[in-house]
Image (cartoon, rainbow, N blue to C red):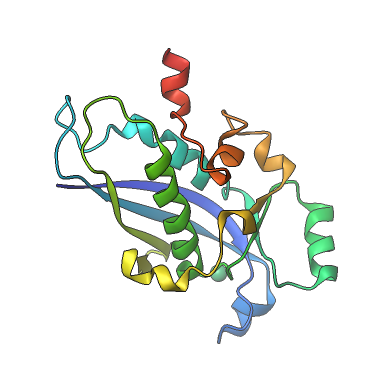
Length: 192
Ligand SMILES: [Zn+2]
């Protein structure tokens, strides 16, 4: 069975090397919509694929890009210095921040979140089917497992600024994920 959860963020970027002059030379923003499709071979004790409350960590990850500047790590040092000097929320990323780039990065990270999450309610084999990133109301990019060969980067290549990290409920989650440590969703930890 498949479920879909929708997340939103307001992000700023420049997409270098694209065809649009406006897009490649100007800092601008979009209201992004991210769809996460998850499936399982069985339902948990509550007749759910996975309780949405357990996706709180996914929300925290996507929210890291909200009111943030997505800085492609291939930008010049001069431009990077400018961005870091005047912004506290900066996500330095290994993909150009197109909808396609975000989709690849979100797939890699959310797949790892789902694989490392401790599940205790009889959930089945949870798998990430697809990520869709809508940059505007009229178009989206979609990534699934068959696009894995396009993910020539790792979590260590994604760097969140201190201004982003300070707002995380669970300050350690990103380091834990990078180290492949199992973890529980912040909401579950709070309820213990
Ligand atoms: Zn844009």
